[in-house]
Length: 277
Image 1 (tube, rainbow, N blue to C red):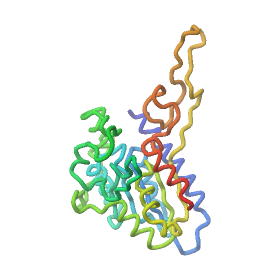
Image 2: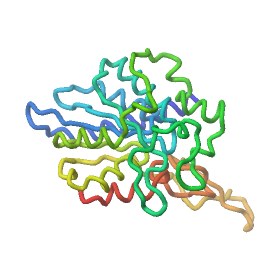
Image 3: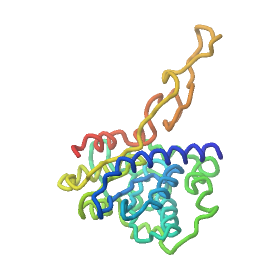
Image 4: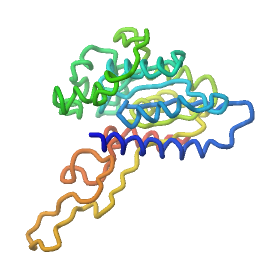
């Protein structure tokens, strides 16, 4: 458990430092505007804290949108983000939620679904017949760990006054449109890309305001991705996953390549990376 949290911390830290290096040439007196889209996994928790510690005269985090398609439930995720912002003195940052059922199999766009309906909070699906979230078991080792980020929120985060409201919570699309409409901004995608893909498909006239897109979405294996057999094994050996799997989804037999954030919504990832920004 401790090793996993430590690994997630260093992954998030290296990722953020690399991106900040790319931002080093800022216009004097004008901070870089940033919008963060996250699934509120443990590594995202550290990434958000790092962004909030940056010099606001250089880097200004202006909004957060939450993708609830995969890792997290809307209400728990929003409350955890609210508590982090309260702890860091940034209750001014809007938080929008989106996710489940965002893009249907026939390409139909449902921009204001995620987190808006009670069915989302029940862990059920609003689109399709098989969703990743439905496979997460209830209780410890499953949804309890997901919703509390392994107890991080309950352990030490102070709680402010803002709370998740299913019928009043701003949607991810509303927050994206509001902030991107205001002018040039860079978008960080550190979860599945559903929210941003829907935005691009629904608001092509606002693409001109997006300066940069930064994605956490690479899958790297330290050894042969097709699996390995022990050196003394027979010719009938069935190859098994070997080496460091990285941030890949499920196990070797069902998915030897796709990184978690890409696997969560591959169509959205394609749209985000081929949206002519």
